[in-house]
Image 1 (cartoon, one colour):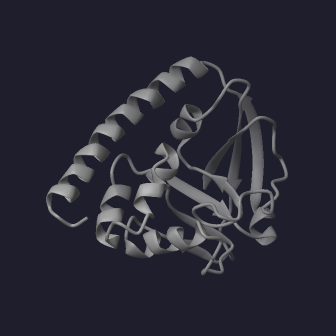
Image 2 (image 1 turned 90 degrees about the vertical axis):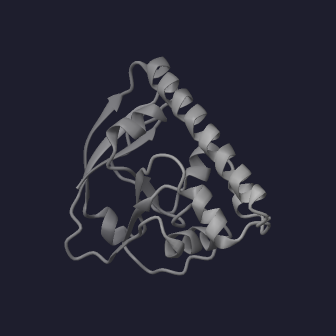
Length: 180
């Protein structure tokens, strides 16, 4: 499985304990199979690291955008990881991407409404490497300096504008339905 990670330096030997404990899938080294996505999130002086992951013999948990995924992310944001796996694969919560988790996890919304908000926008996949066993099966291929950052940032800005409009429409629908 080809994977990418954006950073500021080459990372031939990832550290699974370096990331945030309260990330979507808990602490781990996060990658994506979507090269375009990783470039859109690059900043000035960014480096995209390319890897190949062999998942044979690894305990892999896969999520889709459903209530199990929402529940897992919700608990991980509070640093309560309920799944033991070497690798977790699933959608990135768009609230992480576009910074609205406070509303979604506020407790003012029903789970199904919060989930409907998280389903807005494109679905990008993240892969969290959670164990040293998995790191040993992650082969670093190369690191590339990101060029054309301004163009990538413009594409991200356009995507965010579309997302914000859809998010606003869905919030208005929820409010007008009297569910809040």
